[in-house]
Image 1 (cartoon, rainbow, N blue to C red):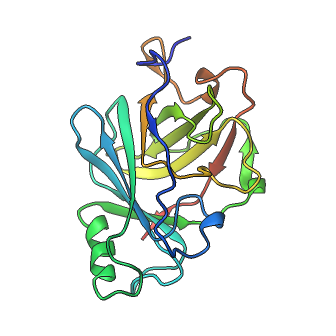
Image 2 (image 1 turned 45 degrees about the vertical axis):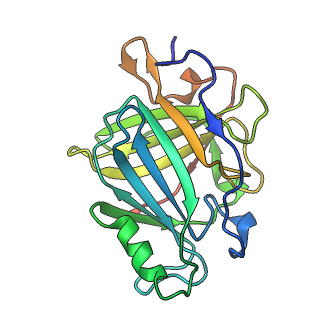
Length: 218
């Protein structure tokens, strides 16, 4: 049993980057009124952009919703999540354009933003898509040794179908991040030379809990 590129704990830059004045920061998977980027760690190539709406979304968008824009195929064994707030505040004249521009150029899926602890299921999620990849990272919420997982479901052309989060314990408030980190490094899970989608290959002793939202074309 091995984890690809596992030579110690992967890097995490901790800190809550929720923009000041954001609505209801304690009830969301990822901070509302924020944007995130997944990049290929070795090249810096953007793979995914996320824009997360709050109570006052731009026209044509839904409140408290995650919008995932897939920009390039997931073929990397190491990816990095970077998180930051929008430059413009919701309701500001330039906010709608900034929101839309963050998603342009990719195939966009949307999923509801709020989750509860009861929506986290113990066990292993069974993908229904033609291809999947499981990544692990240090859990920014700690303590030392705690880890999280991200399973991306992909179609036959490499398009994003869904994203499933894993935690070693069920988060009672439903949050994947208690304090959203500014950067998290993920690495793909392998057993020998074979990719694994089983979080027990991240940590065999953990019960593991997953959150499976429903993604739809936006």
